[in-house]
Structure formats: C-alpha cells, structure tokens
Image 1 (cartoon, helix red, strand yellow):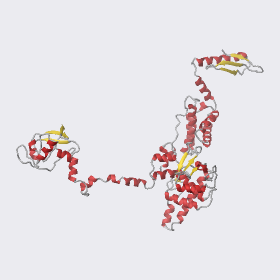
Image 2 (cartoon, rainbow, N blue to C red; image 1 turned 30 degrees about the vertical axis):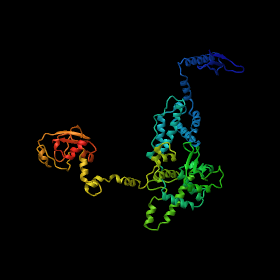
Image 3 (cartoon, rainbow, N blue to C red; image 1 turned 120 degrees about the horizontal axis):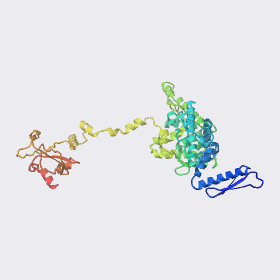
Image 4 (spheres, rainbow, N blue to C red; image 1 turned 90 degrees about the vertical axis):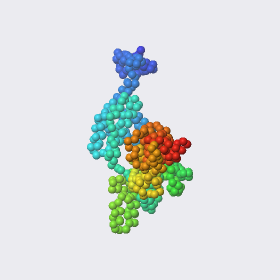
Length: 510
C-alpha cells in the first residue's frame, strides 16, 4: 500500500511504495495537491502489483524508457563500448558520422531511427559524388549504433536491419599497387643518398621503408614504435607492434631479416628506451614524403638510360611511376601491399601470409593484398606442361622407343571391354583338326559365354584365345598373371583336352 506524506520544508507531497521486486521506493509527486498525490501513489502501487503478477513486463517498460531518450544521451555509452574495441580516433569519427545522419534524417529520440531516411541519406551522398567506400562508412556507423541498442536492450528490434551497405569494390577511387623487387632496389639506393626531408634523413627513410615491407606494419603502428619494441638481439630478431595502435588491438610480433636488424640497431643506438624509433611526420605528410622519394628514384633511373628510343619507351612505362597506366597508385600504405605480394611470390602459404598481415578474414588477404605478379599466369601454365605430355600417345605414334611395346599396350587396353587375340601355339578343335586364325570357321556355332575373375566364372562374357573358342572353365593363369589386372571375359566353345598343354598345366597348378 502506497503512502503519501510531506517532509519538513518541502512543498511537494512525497510517495513511498514497494515495487514489483519488493524494494521500497520513494519519489516526489511534484504536486502540492494532496488528492493528486494520492492518485499518483495509487497508480504506482497498481503498476507494481501488475508487474509482480506478471501482467506487465518490466523489461518492456524499461526498453520504452530508453527508446524515448535522446540519441545524444546514448552516444556516450556507445562510445565507451567502442573504446574497448577501437581507438579514440575511430570512436570520434563514428560519432561524427552518426550525428550527421541523425541531423539529416531528423532523428531526435532512439525510437526515431528509420530505414527509409538512412537509405535516402546514402543515396544523396552518392548523388553528391561520394565514393561507395565513403557511403559504406556512414551506413556502417549508424548500423553499428542500432545493433548496439538492440544488444543492450534499449530497442526491441533493429529498425535499420533492412539497410544494406554498398560494395566499395565496385567503385574503388584509390587502387594501390605493390612495389616490384627492382623498383625497391632503386628506391632504397637513391633514398639513402637523398637529403633530409620532413625531418628524416635519407638513411632513416630507407630504413623505414624496409621495415614497413618486412613487417607489414601500418603507418600509425610505425609512428608509435619505440626503441624498446625493437627486439634486435633475439634470434631471429623481431619487432613488437603496440596493441593500442593496431586495428585488431592485439600485440604483433613481426620478424625482420638480420641485415635490417643490424642497421636498425645502429640507427637506435643513441635513443633511449621510450623514444620513437622513427622520427616520422604527420600521417598525410608520410604519404607525400614516400611519393616524393619514389619520384626521385624514377628520375635517377631514367637518367641512367641513353637518350633515344629506349629512354622514350622507358618514360612511357610504369616503372617507379606513382600513378601507372592502369590507374593504380603508390603511397606509403602500398608498402603493406608489397609485404603480402612478396610473401606470396616467395611461396609462403596463404595462412602464413594471413598471420603476418594480421587479417581476421583470409578473403582480405587474397582479394586486396594478393596482387598478381607480371608473368605469373604464363608461368603457372608452364609448370603444368608435364601433365600434358601423354606417353601413350607418344608410343602410339612411335616417337619414343623406350616405352612399352605399342601392340602390348593396345591389347591391355582392349582387355577390359573388347575381344582380344593373343599369339600362341595353334590348337586343335573337337574334330582333331589344326586350328587357324580364321574366325569365319566359328560362325554358326553355339557359344556359351562365361565371365572369369581370377579363374572363376562369375558372369556372362566372351574371351578369345589362339583364334579358337574354349567351352570349359579354364583358369588361364598364364594370361591373368601377365596381362590382366581385372576380370577376364572368356567364351567357351572347345573341349578342354584341346587346350595347349602349358595352359592346362597352369590351370591344374592354380
């Protein structure tokens, strides 16, 4: 039973009652009218009784309360949820995209989320010339927010479940390519001799590019790399990538070659443990710096070519070109593409490449980073050439005398479903006459066909030997051991006593 009372120095009536869980609750009625306060108290007490008896679901009421709250009030909790999985920059970017969509769609409360408005916003972005990757990022942000609301019990269902993300692969505005071995040799040699740029010496930039290729670490991971993360005295040496700067938030152990480890050891010799391994500029400047070094290496390479037709053709080629003829570009992240491509070219299995690249989905390793090497298609076809070298066909044409006798090969092939003729001593038929190879003599004779397997009749069939027919189940071990691996088809039409002696002895010994 709810009670209504007034505290000292309070102008509003207070209400006390027990909720559906038996817990005592106290709240202000927000009214100075005693009769109104009593009605509110009775309502609260009645609601608690209905919940206690299972007539009303308290979870549904709590969900309705959250759904009526503003989206802005939920974004803080959503941001805290994301921080446990992503970096601060990603959380802030996601929140900005959600607020942009909510402003465009007129979403104020959580219950206002609507699929049609989100689809309309995505269509307007596409009309404005935004790439499908940008549209996908906006749609992914708002969909992750709605899924989180359902998962945490703030919405009964996902209102954006029917909203589909576009496929960015069908409209890629930036396609990166890998660096070939020869291109990297020129880039490394020329960069080492280059002047200081963007606060980094030429040698430091060359070491940075080599480290990026050998480890597959991203620009943000390399910029956060400290001297203490370089385990260069280990066998084999490796680099520890910090979990907070990685996409998957996991500590990465990336191995490097001993030659690079020796150079890095000399590079960080005067640095303290917590200092940065590389004095890298801002993220945008890193891409600009790398493209400048690539362009510088291309100019140096062209200068080595003699003036004439060869140099003209080289200038039109894609070697060390920042943007090639197919529209593929080179930036700092292209070094990560180079890591996967070189590993695949070196013969590493796909699971190993996936582990080094730290991909959760192997499809990403194959589709985006497993670039096709020039000439790899023709080389793959050349490697299966031996499978198309048919020794049977060579023997049939008489081009290889080392193979088995062609006539014997033909007989063995015929033995499985055809009547074959074997050269042997002549036999006598039931009339005592010497047999010949003329099959016309057997026309009109009654033949009983028996299929033999290992000398035992099991089904109907036919078998011809010595140009005569046998009418008795004979186990021809001479033939079974030398020419057959499967069942023999035997036709019976002659007395067993007229079978050659060698055959009868084989049958008796079998």
